[in-house]
Amino acid sequence: MIPFSDEELYHAVKNSLPQVSVYVSSHGGGITLLGVKDSIIYIELVGACHGCSMSLMTTNMVVRRELRNLIHPELFVINVDGTPKNKLPDDYYSPAEEPKVKKKSMIDKVKNIFA
Image 1: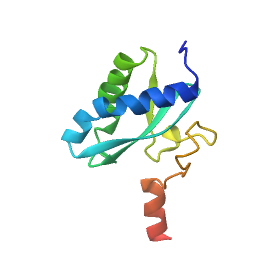
Image 2: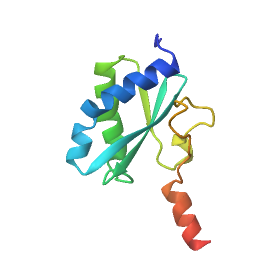
Image 3: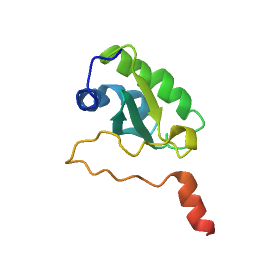
């Protein structure tokens, strides 16, 4: 069991992202921390990594592994990529000063083009 509140975990992840994102940055991408819900970290891979066929591997083998090494060995990370399986819950934790804006997924953007 992870001994942190969602708020504590959010701030720990936020402070660790510069170290974690080195690999992603080297590929022209970035990581946005969206929020935390029930000790699950919700991120979005951006830039060249957004929508990449290797994004699941990057999330699991790079981001999750590094956060587990830095914070807690049982962390779980979800890349919010627009699929129903990987969606951001409505009541996630994110500090008040950071706007809780649900970004449109790539699928939603494509739907709007053809609507």
